[in-house]
Length: 284
Image 1 (tube, one colour):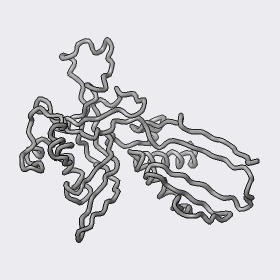
Image 2 (tube, helix red, strand yellow; image 1 turned 180 degrees about the horizontal axis):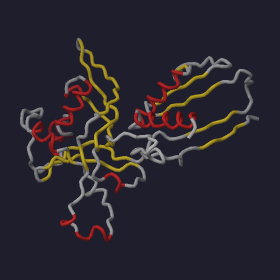
Image 3 (cartoon, one colour; image 1 turned 90 degrees about the vertical axis):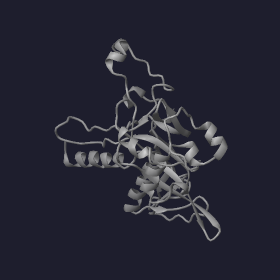
Image 4 (cartoon, helix red, strand yellow; image 1 turned 90 degrees about the horizontal axis):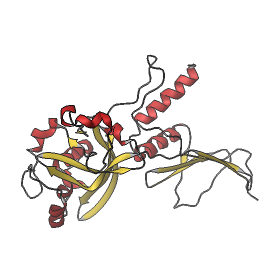
């Protein structure tokens, strides 16, 4: 592998490690574009583009569009477009993710995209995405968007031990509703018992899917495990009650790696080029 090839691979690995979600991917792309001279513009403003300059814009914190105007570009000439998607198959947390069954704290998730779901079993998982925070100051309320990623493992989608499922080697079909249900790591169990919900009660091991409780209070504690909210609040340096809403997904804590000891770079992130396309346009 040449030095240039090694640099390209390392840059890709670094990008993947910094982009566990589509929101992080857009933010990382924005940072890299600004580092090489791209200027941010807004769809809400009138553009005054200049030849030889480079620009980019974002939409919903998950889409980024960048373009460069050639020094000799003339209005009406053709142009090239290269596109790719920033999302990938994943397990997204449900709007009501709080599930307790048999004393086990589960996190309700739903599949997104067409994934190889069997690869999600027995991995050290965490959560990443964006959180909407509510701030009250002098009678006024403001909302802000924050990216979040908890580095340490907090969840796992377990498989049964072989003596509990002797026929698993004859074939296993993943049921996304019953098999792909992450449980909070057992290392958090002691902390869970200390976390109080909004009405002052301690989260228990009683059977509960969060929906009835949510109908009564409408609070985040009713929708999601208090320990999960505590972890997010700690990462964001805010109070759990400041969390108004979030869009999170399960994320592998194992980083992508690139080493001479392996033949190809390895990444737990699903890299897909199926979303790439390239067109050349020439205006009439």
